Image 1: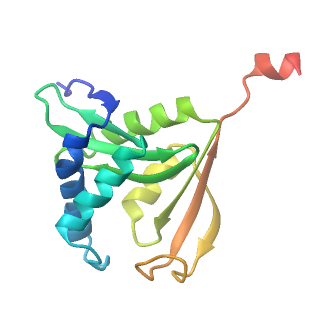
Image 2 (image 1 turned 135 degrees about the vertical axis):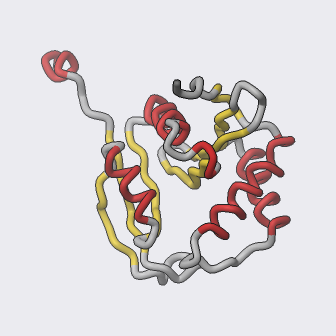
Length: 159
């Protein structure tokens, strides 16, 4: 029996603590990723993204937050899913909602983050550029991914 689909909603300022913890936990779970910010700084960062209106959260039936996506127009600043919810469709639901809201999505992820790379590639993203780490705070090689909505056959026929 699979878990019920999460409810997606706009993040509230009171969600910042849980979202900041997701960021901190994700950094701690990847030994290759340097710790650059304190837990308080991660919470403040989450709060800033929420205040800008960028954040959609996935909420379980019991009210626990399972993940979030921060999107500014077509740029995905962040996508985090709790370890307990990974593989359950939460990340896919958040990404699908972002795809419905934008014709094109762009994002960066680290080369070392093989799980994220597989996830994005299965979701139709393609690598457009490679970075050597000089343009990110972590100093880690990264990949720039792009997804573009495909025109439906009916749209092309009208063209």
